[in-house]
Structure formats: structure tokens, C-alpha cells
Amino acid sequence: MQCKLANFVFKPSLVGVIACLVCIPLFIKFGFWQNHKAQQKIAIQAVYEAAKVNGALPFPVSLQAGITPADWQYKKVMVSGEYAPQYQFLLDNQVEGNRAGFHVITPLKISGSSDYVLVNRGWILAHATHASLPDFSTPSGVQTVVGQVWVPSKKIFSLEAKTAPNAGGPTQPWQAVWQHMNLAAYQQRVPLKVSSMVIKLDPASEAGGFVRHWTVSAERITTHMGYAYQWFGFAVATLLIFLYMSISKVRPEQ
Image (cartoon, one colour):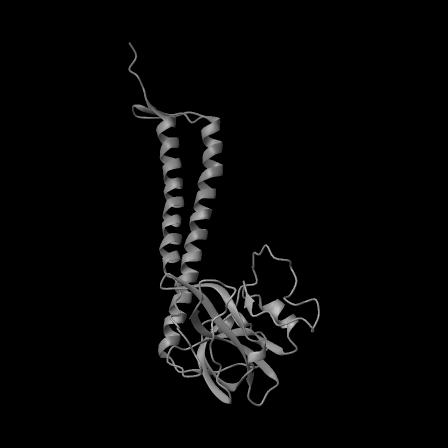
């Protein structure tokens, strides 16, 4: 194919045409994909920030038809109940101010119900060796818990055996430290009806909390937008290179 315009001729190569038809749509698709991920995180950030100033909603013990736990992600909720410390555990590998520690996860028996919900009560400092676990207290009696809903990810990578802790039998001691927030494994392990949602205790709550600097990282928003611009840039660069290699100036006849 050849097209002449004024003193220039457009004569693309077959390889160039194929490269454009494949690469440009692919780069644009990747750009929109990264932009979509950025917009999702912007929406999450907006919900998270709004929950800080909005009033607390009653915790949904049972979800209405068509409503999933993800629909409650980051919403501010309130629930009353009593802690069940015999089934609480420490979530390992949590960092606060460059110091290693744990998050204290305690089940709460919801008042007027047989259901439980896990409450992340915050961060505590670990000892120099994990062989010695930190001491902490758990308040007794009815507590009014206010916090934000967190739906743990089901995508967990672990080198450990894919079985619930203490799956060998009820005579084994309770495993006090967990490497991952594996809610499915927890629900299988304990003789409790546990919600698929977790509550991160509000920093202002007095229901037995520890260090609570909950954040939703906004860094990934900038990263995704940067990747989107990069992919769009690749598409533009591919087109410009294709045009540069395909257009040549007509030499005057001697």
C-alpha cells in the first residue's frame, strides 16, 4: 500500500501495520485497566473518609438479600456484646512506627444473638523473641464496639499447610499467633457462628483497644494513574514511530 501527498509518500510495511494493530489496542486496554483500578481505590478512599465523620450504623448481624459483605466495606458500625477471649489470637507481622508487633483479634458475642464478630482491637508491641508473647488485657462484661467494617481478602499466600490451625483435634492448645487473617480457617476451627466481616475498633472507642492508626493507603492510586499514563504513552509512541518509519519525502527527479 502506498499513498502520496504533496512531497511525501506514505508507504507502511506489513510488519509495521501488524505491530500497530496488535500493540496500540493492547496498550490502550492496559491503560484503561490501570485507570479503572485507580478509580476503584479513589472510591474506596472516599468511603473510608466519609465513614470517619458519619454516624455509626447498626452492625448487620444478617445481610439482606442481594447485599454482600463487600457492600459494607469501610462503613462505620456499632454493636454491643461480650468478648470471648478464649478464641482470640494475635495477627503476626504488623508494623507500627517501624516496630514489629501484633494485631489483637478478639471475637465478640453479639448481644441478643448467638452470632459473633471478630474485632481488631489494635496493635501491640512484640517482644524481641516470638517465643515470649506480650501480655495484654481483655475487658469483661458488655462492651459497645464502634469501628469500621473490614472484609479480609480470601487471596492468602502461605507456605504453611492448607489446613486450619489445630485441625488435628480439640485436645490441642489454641494457637495464639496466626500468620494471616484467614477467616475461612478461623470459622472452621472455632465452634462459633462468626460473621464474614471484621470490625476495626475506632481509635476513640474505649472497648479495650490498643494502638489504632487505621489507614487506607493512597499511594497505589498515584501508582495506578502513573501506569495508565505510561501505557497510553506507549500507544502514542507506537503510532508516532509507525508514522515516522512509514512516511518519507519524495526525492526530486534528476
